[in-house]
Length: 382
Ligand SMILES: [Zn+2]
Image (cartoon, rainbow, N blue to C red; front, side, top):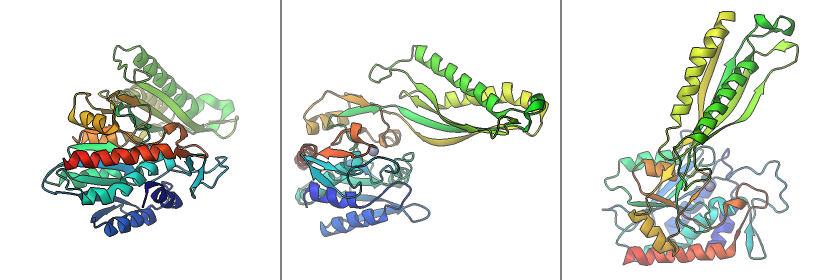
């Protein structure tokens, strides 16, 4: 099958992260079986989702991982003019949820499998297709722990997130945190007798803003990224019921987008210290049974691969260019990198179309990715 036909099949599986991806994974498994490739499924605890891992070529050495996530973001509330889970071709573009992010890459990889199989590969090619990337790079973690037990670690990984096939060597990391301020309610006419959860949350958010200002002014900069410093922000807040009640609860979600090498946990520790040393004692002096609780949301590390590395040379050969860049969004690449597997990001399509209504990929991008897969075969067979 050609990549475009495979993509049409893949788009037909509505693999929104909250739902199962098993039908899609089984389709890929059956396709690989027909190609004579064995694969391993790694299920989640509920067995409602699975990662797929397969190796083509020799098994007594490391190899190149081609990695993609099978889940997509929801379409709820988006004004789609075309069916999201049915591929539509129009004016040289293929529309559907996941065409760009990132089933297009998976389709090109699968279309190339027959040539991977028939080539006399000296270096193996591994396929790593994950679930739950869009909700915090969750699925890929069990692929990485499975790899720890293998005698030969992969020597390179190409994450096919959409970069218009430009080789990308880095992205920032992310730490998301949910904070719950547990105050004490009372009639607002007696406000000093209660503990106002919203007002304490406001102090914490102000603290976070100050940390953000400090990071922006810090000498710790990396001009490969935009903005060239680590950033913070509060994205969601909820609390309170009525103006005449001192609010008992306030919850807010905040994040750190960290430069590679910057420990986002530093920000979290500073926030916790502030809560524990400044806010909680004052809250408890009014009502003892009050608290501020932090819980982790999604997080992934940054990616930073050296331009002088072998994996950078490999992707430059495959992509036919060595103008390495960075991307603003995160990928599973940070986790591969953290596991000691040299990683780059390079895939077809453009993230400008990702996560939006009427998401599409240009057919020309799929064709260029097909050609990149053929160069990989030639390179690894040589
Ligand atoms: Zn993606």
